[in-house]
Length: 148
Image 1: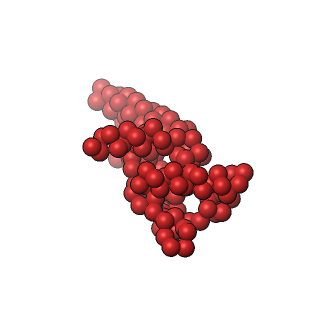
Image 2 (image 1 turned 60 degrees about the horizontal axis):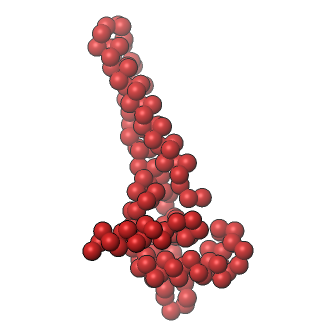
Image 3 (image 1 turned 180 degrees about the vertical axis):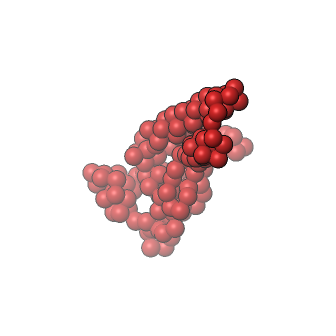
């Protein structure tokens, strides 16, 4: 049942609706009104923002309080959202943490173990360099795919 629901949400969560949901994920603590969504995303009119907020509400992702403001009801990880994690109010690529960790490890390795250009040092640098390059390319790819 949840797989069907996730498929439906993934098919509906595209374009401007995804941008509205992304904006709500970034401001998840506070309820947000139609006009503030319209202004933040540069929409042409409040009715466009209302349409997308109601679309998200019909999917069960948003709730609406008595004052007419919307709040995040559920966080789903479908589509491009699977590549991001929320940290201190920022949505960052999931691979960013591994990229930073392997970069620090690659930088610290020659400091802690001065290289003598033996086979194991060369192999460690090659594997470390490839790992850093792969993780940073995945981080950059996810960052490019984020909804703006």
